[in-house]
Image 1 (cartoon, rainbow, N blue to C red):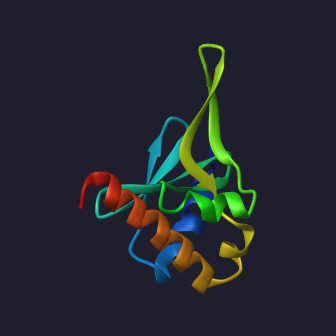
Image 2: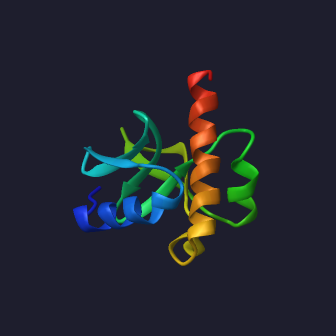
Length: 111
């Protein structure tokens, strides 16, 4: 799992219409944070957004895959799903999908 700093910087720039976002290096990728709360991650130059029971249907309806990794011989899926490609073409789409992921992170925190 790797991610380029250039792609992380690009995503942070694309999310500027949503909020001030920071990319923090972690495990060869990046966690994306707003106000110290992680709501997205970047692995292999792919953006994944946090999902929960309230939002996962939007990702599944678009056939967007979850982030997975191998651990001890088995595949583990996290509640982060690939961002739809149009988020990189439309600031409004990026804002909407980033907000959805942020709201999941807030709910998971209990706030």
